[in-house]
Every structure is written in structure tokens, then in C-alpha cells.
Length: 315
Ligand SMILES: [Zn+2]
Image (cartoon, rainbow, N blue to C red; front, side):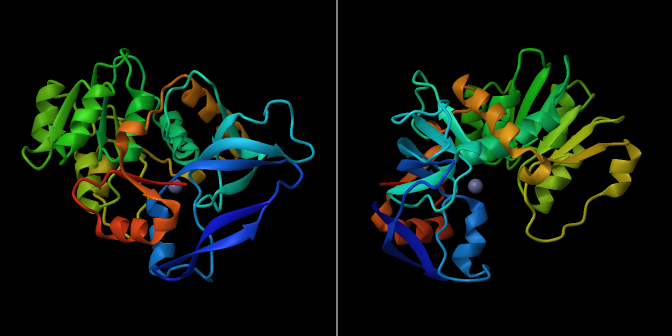
């Protein structure tokens, strides 16, 4: 079958090429309905990839059009699926059954971003606050929002979202944050001191990827045996206040996507969260681009207009 595919032929230049595509054994062929644009693709766009041309796109979802030999009855032609994809900025892409999540019909969400949901399911598993805990999330970008969606619970005393953007804080309240703190307007440490009556947070999820955010996260930890979950991917070394972390005997978990060895089991667990309508992304998609405009999509991504939250590419 012929398919258009977006190929990054050199840094900052996409071309739409035609490819032949079909499912190999144990793969499904998916008609793309959308694919999320990911910060991790930014280095590829800028030229930090070993070789070009390359075909990015790993946050795809769509409808199963064909099954290769060996694909089980779990997946039927016509199913809506997502998963851990590759080369998904295409009319059609293939995906191993092992990394394919099947979305129930009753799930009303349009944007089914399997790969980032999978990444965040790792964060949810790593953070697992216990009854009565105060949870704080620093950085309410898409990953922070999904972590909140996965973690907010009436079993917790406080669920505190920290960001500088009022829109993201409003989304956080909708997703179950009991308190929001705009750290551009008030000192988050003072705010969390007051919210928690001086206890501070039992569990803090850091989701900014910058030193200022990590500093805030460290300062929000309670005084004995708190848990710090590092969700961000840091592109450069930063200094962290180890005196403070040692002083409070913090447990530090780097929950970056690679944390789990068993990705097949991780996909199964992520599928549960998608089908139980825990993860929701439609309201976070601020920018949509057609496949033929992928060049403009990445230029917009690079220039990040102030209202940018999450971009997706659609056919
Ligand atoms: Zn991604």
C-alpha cells in the first residue's frame, strides 16, 4: 500500500515522500488519525540526530486497517488503537501488536496519545501516594496534567498543582487539584506551607526539566522521608540542593520512561488507564496541523507561541 510519510531530510527541513507499507508478522497496519508532537523530537529537528533522512513520529493513533500474520484476536480490523509507535507522521504506519493498545468504543477522547500516556503511567506507578498524603506537582505541561489525572484521588489530603500559567492551573483544577499555586505570583513554598498547615508535601512530582523547577520541588518536600519523583528529562546537568535532600532523607525516583523493563506489561497497564477514561488529552491540544504542513508545524513548535500546550499532526 502507498502512504505519504513525513521525512526529516536534514535539520529543520521536512519533505513528504511516498512509501510502500504493509504489516509484517505480528504487526498491525494503522490508518493514522493523529500523532502528537513531542519535545523529545526537538533535538532531531535541530540536527542532533546521527543520520538523516529520518522519519519521526511516535505518538500516533488511528484505526486498524490490516493485520499481519500472527496478530491475535485481541485486535480486530476497525479497532481504534494507539501505542508505542514510530514513523507515525504518515497516512499509514505499522506497529507491533506487543506495543499496541486497543481503545474501547465508549472512550470519547479523540486524541489517544499512547506513548506519552505510557510514559506517565510509569510516573503514576512510581509516585503512588498513600492515604492522607499531600501531593504536589511542579510543572503542569501535558505530562504534569496526565500525571495529575492519574494521581488525583479523594484519598489524598491535598493535591497541589504549581505552574506559572493560569490556563494550565485551570485544567489542573478540573482534573482534581484541590489547590493551585501560580509561582509567578506567589512563593510556592509559602503557599504550600499554608495549604498543608506547615507539613509540606509527602510526594512531589517534578515536571519542569529546569533548575528553577527542581529547586521548587525540593523545597516543597516535607521534613522526613518524603518522596521526590523526577518526571522531566533534563537536557543539561543542573545543580541540586543535596544538603536539603539529605537533611530530609528523601527518596528520589527517576521515573523517566525508560524506568520499566517490561514495556509489554506497561502497555497493558496504560491501556487500562485509557479505557477507564483516566487519561484525557483533547482539551490540552492547542495546535493541530495537517500532515502536508508538517514543516510549519515544527516551525511553530520551535517558536512556541504563548498559548502552545500540545501540538498534533492530523492527516
Ligand atoms: Zn513522546
